[in-house]
Image 1 (cartoon, rainbow, N blue to C red):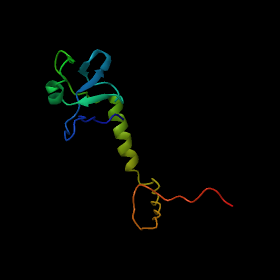
Image 2: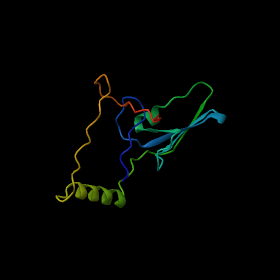
Image 3: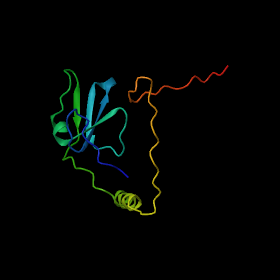
Image 4: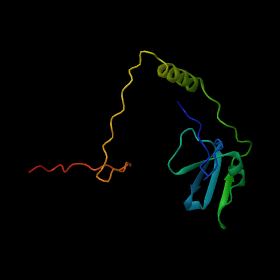
Length: 121
């Protein structure tokens, strides 16, 4: 299921309607319609940020002519959402208890874990 992509600008939670890509060799920023998939070297922008984008001196901006439109949910998206809701609400769904987390020596829980030494003598 495709989720609603948000604007890449810090602090902006508006839905993305455009994709920003840089062509460094040409000193050009290209703002076009929202790409089908999120790419690692491009940025999703809301309409406000897509229209207000500025670039460094000497660079050029190429913008999409016309209005930016938010992508409409497809039948596949709606079907996947309905199936996910149905699956989550099944009464016969096995519920797995969460695994107890091991604590490190300091008793602090975090994203890092202490692993035993793999070399046995």
